[in-house]
Structure formats: C-alpha cells, structure tokens
Image 1 (cartoon, rainbow, N blue to C red):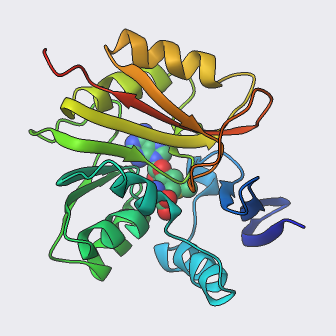
Image 2: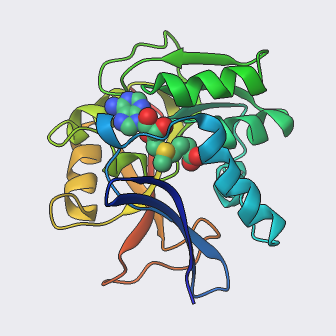
Length: 223
Ligand SMILES: C[S@@+](CC[C@H](N)C(=O)[O-])C[C@H]1O[C@@H](n2cnc3c(N)ncnc32)[C@H](O)[C@@H]1O
C-alpha cells in the first residue's frame, strides 16, 4: 500500500510525496506534479515536514545519500537541492557539498538549516559553480521538475560539473515525454557513459517496464 501524503493543496491540485515499496524491500520516493511557479510549496518547512513524518514512521529518507556514498565521493553537488535534505546528510557524513536550487523558498530554508554550507540560487541549465565534483546528484525527481525542453541542457550543464572519472546520479519517474532513452541520449551527448541503473535508491535491479529509474553515468577519466 503506497504511503501517500498530500503536502500542499492549491485549488484542486495537490502535490504528493509518496514512498513506494521497491522489489528489494527498499523504497522509491515519488514526488508528483511538476514544480511550476504556481505549484510551489509555501515554505521549505512545509516540504521538510513531510519527510520528517515519513522518518517518524520509520521510513528511510536517506536512500539517496546512501547510494551516493557507494561511489565514495569527497565532493558532491546536490543539484536541485531543495531544502538541503540530501546535501545536509552528506555533509554530516564528512563530504564537501554544494547545493543549487532555483526556488528561493526551498533553498532559503536550506540556508537557515545549514548556514555553514554553500547554497547557490540558480538554474541547473545555466549555473556555473566554478568547480567540479566527484558526484553530481539529482535526487527527489528533479528531472521531472525542470522546464520542459530544458532537460538536455540541464544534463549537459551538470555533466560539465563532474570531475573526470566522477559520476552523475539522477532518480526520477519515467514518462513518455522524458524517459530513460531521452536521458541516456542527453548523457551520451554530454560525453557520459552509463555504468548502472537501479529501480530504487536502495539499488534494486532495474527492469524494463519500471516507471522509476536511478541512473548512474560516469565522466571519462581522460578529457
Ligand atoms: C521535489 S524537489 C527535490 C528537492 C531535493 N533534491 C530533495 O530530494 O529533497 C525538486 C527541486 O528541483 C528544483 N528545480 C526544478 N527545476 C530546477 C532548475 N531548473 N534549476 C534548479 N533547481 C530546479 C525545485 O526548485 C525543487 O526544489
């Protein structure tokens, strides 16, 4: 039974965070609805409260950080960091993190929670952080929230922020308009090679027909 929790109602539209069971007993965090200007959360606190409630029920809310840590990064760019859920957890594990997000309410809340970390309010399609990272992670289905038709630009720009030999990791719901074929094509165009694909952040094997994928692409060592 999916754990579906409305986190904002605006007129008849609702945005949901939902934890679905994966095949390995792990979970897939699914956030429904595109992140449009008229559909944003009133506050980062509102977004965080949903995750806190899930944690209080004993659900794992750090599957993304766990998977990122498998690649043993010293530095991580949390791309579409929102309220810093993933970045703050990675920083607590001793990793050098930077967060980027376009939504002032979300990243503003991250700043309040962790003022010692670097938070950049900018667009993933165009931001230049001025350095590269061992891992760039797009958690919380960021790819389905970027403006339609900018997906390839986002992947290309994030690829530019990956160290040679480093990884771009993204988990999102697959749709007809943007699925793994389009994502892989954008990653290949950006010079990345796919090294793994999972159906959950806990690392369950991905199978054709799955509607959620966590994709791991590597940047070539020689550039
Ligand atoms: C569902 S939230 C996920 C937040 C966080 N990664 C997490 O897992 O908790 C999606 C985030 O993507 C951000 N986002 C969407 N399009 C973006 C863009 N073009 N540039 C930067 N951030 C973007 C939104 O502002 C929002 O904070």
